[in-house]
Length: 221
Picture 1 (cartoon, one colour):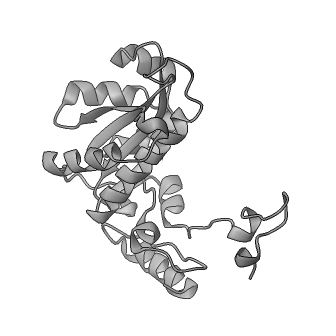
Picture 2 (cartoon, rainbow, N blue to C red; picture 1 turned 120 degrees about the vertical axis):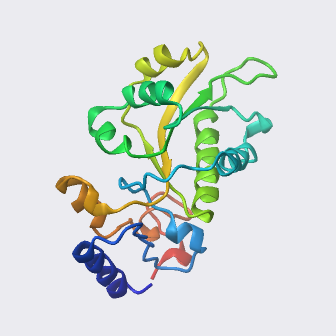
């Protein structure tokens, strides 16, 4: 989508309150539609996520790459159908995130195992590998019309206590999962953020060759 077309789409969404608004990225170079269509909304539909679909999301996470095939990830998951655990999950979020995440039908926390299981030594890329699993889960969700919003804003200590996370495991991110909702349902401050154009640093700012700060030739425009 051209930049002007994207801005017009967002303007129409703001004016009409389009339900289930999509927000495809305006890219400088071609990328797969799954990448363009992935974004982190705060407006979620009250439609539940089918158990079989939810299982497929975590199956996608299962097959992510990891150092030594360690698969150092685990997930705590709560759906709105499980009111007790959903309340516990919502309770570990900071207030800012809880205000909007309470509408998502699924909440989760990803957790990283700090040490390799085959020799007990520290795994320096455990959090990286959990991030890879989360990204793969997100891609699968996007392919199914679902949206995922990952959050750093939650209490690790409350999560440990609420869910009995054992020693040697570290919470990484909280995750909201669901179908897209109506941005007009959000409070004004959240709504403005939801409807704002998406921006990213251009690749020439972070792709280098030879020495730090020297932009890779293919990344120059």
